[in-house]
Length: 622
Image (cartoon, rainbow, N blue to C red; front, side):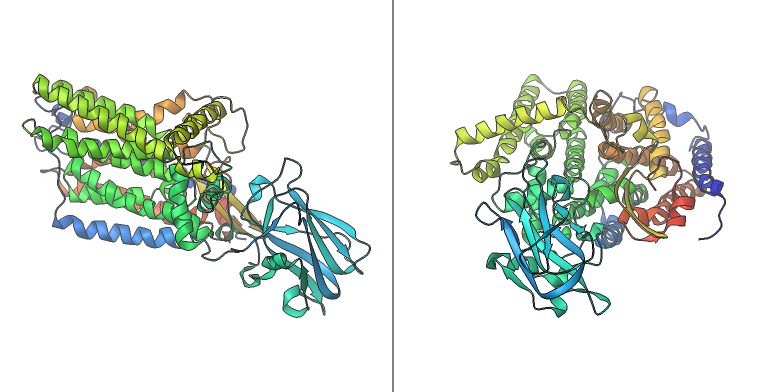
């Protein structure tokens, strides 16, 4: 390992803080067309909160959108997860709790590597007894093969005790049902460590247990993020598997739609890491052209839209969070759609026909319903929509009949349609329990789950190593480590945090949004702050356990705040240096992404690199 002074790592955050301070000083010094550098603060529209015109996509936007999306997609799907994993399982049942494996001759068993499937028994009984015997008569108990609820769809080692020769191996489920995918029995043969199936005449009883040895080629050299579930995938990926197979989901602390979307990837690619992560990664890619569209609608600038989208693509949280099979991706995706469509509605001209105002409202309500059916926290964003909706109606010059019609349509779009979507998302919950699919059972299951979810979250009292409060999120003080594995001088880890340039620079941009809102009565600043505060402030009031990924929706609005700053710097009449400053800021975000990419993707890297280059704060889990 190179000899590097311990203080070197602190140079990087200090340098970034200096860069952000310098950059915003350059922003403040940017000449305005009227040569009054602060005149833009007083440039508010003649009518307060005038929504103005909406920017439209043009041919010049096609190339940057395609290029940014394609490059990001290459990173998003690379090393996403193995496309192959054990698909056949031996299921222990009351009539068949044990498997007997005859290796053909006595050998020293070095390690048993096993892939866990679904199901687990009562607490304290989620394991398999592992026994060895030289003659099939007397058996010695080995350390148990555990299968806790936190160990589903993962590879695990069971290390035998004294290395005595054994011919027979007996595996017995302590409770049923338990599901086991594959057994990799490594033995010492001729002084070499080999798979038993590679050189021994292995037989298995009963016949159904042959599933434990039918995919031996899939046994990896070690457990890694690419070959098994990690963090909350043990709940959400498992729920997707259960929905595909008509099993009542174990995890029911969130609405069903997010898990149902994950299950689409499982249906397409099997119950593999790639399969259960596919839909999240895909929607993470699709967020980029959608954000570009929103930036273009707001600022009507190809340059600003491209730079903002690149910064979002280079955000650590966006990258890490969309590559793990949890439901937060779908929350952010639908929040983004909601604000795209509400912006299209609030920027309609005052003389637009009533019928022309309905499509964006309908699409906004549809997105709201889909988001709420994926995760409750999407409802928080509805507060921001409501404020923008009220401002638009309050400052409009429409008659009573127009306003009444809009309100009536909104009841349908934002209450009835979301309610129907939310209720229909419970269809798999009804059918998986063997109930008749009818309105009564559907409503009963939906309401029963609401009570369960509310009680679970309101009464949750727990601690977690990576729990973080809202003030930690603002400055990246406590990231969350999803996966960590150290092998000598090499380390593989997946960490969720924001790109420091976005989290710190974005907060500074929010301050300027506040100035524009309260002094300039800027509608764009109002839009951005409504979005940011609606998805962030509710978490300040939450007393239960919270994590950094709860800031994921808010970070999207930090990009929009930066977009407002970028637009002020590069608007008509600004000099070339202002445009160059925006480009430098964007390039710095990309540089940080490349710098941190290994600890966002799980790629093995030297430990010294994480310790002396990336661990900017002592509490960062590196």
